[in-house]
Image (cartoon, rainbow, N blue to C red):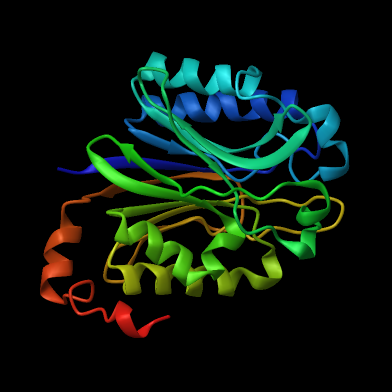
Length: 260
């Protein structure tokens, strides 16, 4: 059985949550009306990297962005996910959340690896928990942008049973080939599906690369966006993971006693 994925590759208005919610709303509706079962938005899709104003624009987990995502998930019977600026009583996080058709928050993953080139460590707290979650009947994992440069972190989620990796990002255009190559490598070495949403456009400091992508467990690109705004659709059959892992049994052949 396949699952229809929609990746919303969008530009983000710097530090303007209301405008970004308004821009995303018709795109989420369009994706749902076109049959998407899982809809993925980019990293910090309501704020961008306006970190200096997080004390003004970040929101708690019951804020308007979360209500909007839960409302749409319930209305269309889908799962909606993306990363948002979280305010936890004055502590700020880059938090990947997802809501299912029952309005349940099935994922709350606070970005673990903070990206110094964008000064995240100066404004944000790092998370301490894994991103495993259940979407439909599939155990998956959600991570954020820079996390994909840490293969041991991705493998940790796979050892906990994940069959798919959902990635949200604001990956800069000058390193977009790193984005593609890292994601393809993570797919091959973990024999899993990769569903990755990157933003497009620019803020005052960076231009972003787009190229949201879906990769199968053999490392084949199943669908890929360009560098502009678009909704990328793909059918994913998570049941393929088991057969591929049996064909080349890397998880059975690991030697963790030698890895420390």
